[in-house]
Image (cartoon, rainbow over all chains, first blue to last red; front, top):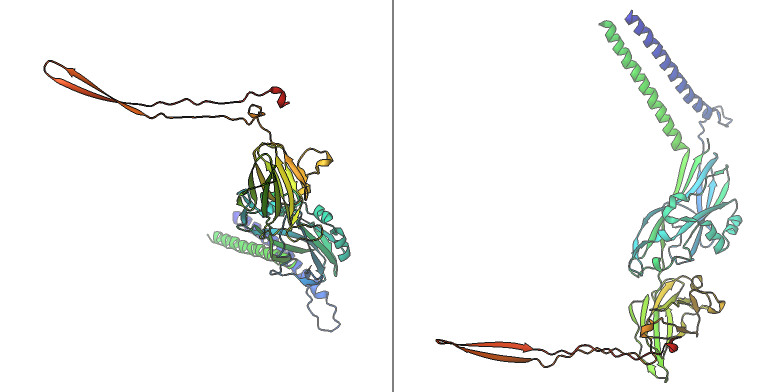
Length: 218
Length: 249
C-alpha cells in the first residue's frame, strides 16, 4: 500500500511542477512574442525589434553651449575658490532620446576630501561648511529664472554637503523626446567664520560626483 | 528494495526540475533589471576653499606729535598684537596679503580687558570702484593694553553695526575713522597719580664669622673652630598713593 501511496504523491508533485514550468516558459514566450509582433516593417520577413532605452545628459559650459557629460567631465569650475557667501550654480539637461518613458533623479556624492588646518590650529573638513540643493524646470529660461539671484540660489541649497545622501533631487518622469533642466547649487553660508579659513598649508578640497539615474517605467 | 530505488530516483528528478525553474526565474529577473536602468556619472569635480590673510602697518604718535616706534607682533599673517600705551594715537593700515585667494575680507579688532569689538570695512584683493584694497583708521586706548588685529574672511557687516545706529554689539570701522578703546581696569589699581608698587629685596654683604673655641683639659688641648655665615635681607616694601574716592566716579 505504501509504495502505491508514494507513487501517487510523486505523480502529483511531478504534475504540479510541470504545470509551473509550463506557466513560466509560457510567460517568457509571450514576452518574446510581444517584441516579435511589435515590428512595423512591411517586409514579409519579420524583424526582431528591441526596445530603445536612451538617456542623454549634458551640462552648460561657461560660454552657454551644452556638452555631453561623461566620467571625466569637470562640471564645476576648477578655478573657483569658496569663501563665505560664494555660490556656484551648474546646469544639466536631461533628455529622453529613446522610445521608453522613464523616471530620473540626480544626486551628488562626496568621493574624497582633504582635512586641512584652520587659523586656530584646528583640523576641519570643507564639506562640513558647504550646502547644496537641486531645482528642475521644463525650459532653460525657467531654470535660469529660478536661480537668477544669489539669494534665490542659496534658498534652494539647504542640505549640508556632509549629509549629501539626504539631498537627492526627487524622481521625475520624462516622456519620450522629453527634456528636463536641472540646476545644482553649491554655496558656503555667510556665517562660516575663520573656522574654515585655512592656515596656508594643505588646501581643503572636496571631490564631488554627480549621478543621474534613469529607471524605465514598466 | 526496487520501490525504494524508484522513490529516490523520482526525488532526484523532482529536485533537478525545481532547481532549473528557480534558476530560470532568477535569470529572467536580473536580465529585466539591467535592461530597465541607466546611470550617467561625472566624478571629476573638485571644490576648493579660498584663504584670507592681511598685511598690517602701524604707526604711533604721542601727544607731542612725536613718532613712537610700534612693532606689531605676529605669528602669521592672520593675527597681529600691539602693545598699546595711553597718550599714543595709532594709525593702522590693513590690506590683503599677496597670497590671499579670497575676493574680500576684513580685520577684527579686540583688546585685553576691553568689551568693545570692532570690524573694519571690507578690503578687496582686487581693488575697484567702491572696492578699496586698504583701509586706514586710528586707535587710542584709555589704559595700557594689548590690541589684537585678526584677519577674517567673509563680510564684516554680517557681524557689526554702525555705532550711530545705537545698537549694542560689535561696531563697524570705516576709512579714516578714529576709535577709542575703553579698557576696564580694576578699581584698586586706579589712581590719579601713576600708581606704583615698589618691591625691593637687598642682600647685605654676607659676612663670615669665625669663632675659635679653645678648651683646655688637664691632659689635652682641643681647639674647635666654628664657621658661621650671616646674611642680612631687607623685606619688600609697597608704596601706594592714597586715592580720593570721588575721583573714581
